[in-house]
Length: 123
Image 1 (cartoon, helix red, strand yellow):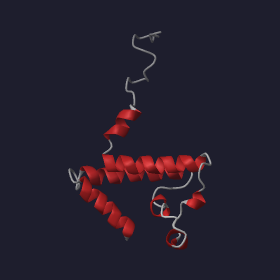
Image 2 (spheres, rainbow, N blue to C red):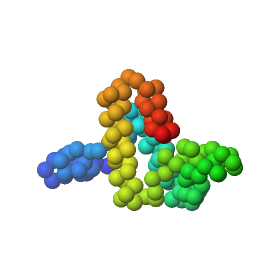
Image 3 (cartoon, rainbow, N blue to C red):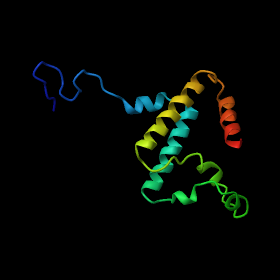
């Protein structure tokens, strides 16, 4: 079913004819930045629907090295709080600056970028 707007054109488009392609934007993000964004989003989503507790994600040396809960080494960098405006700002800056680095200084050097992130995590 095609609805024509009064001036011609399709009513399914927004007013200026530009549609935002969310999947296209997501797929344009470089692979390491996209993986980090996806991990952060999925971790937050899992906490939001009570699949996992945020208390099982934070860094705790005793729980990691004595109890063997090694996933905390990774999840502590993936959880940015529950869905909120604060979470959106964290995701915006995460994607913006990871993408700038990955497309700029680390263009074609994916392994170097991963090493850079791992170095930051280690420090």
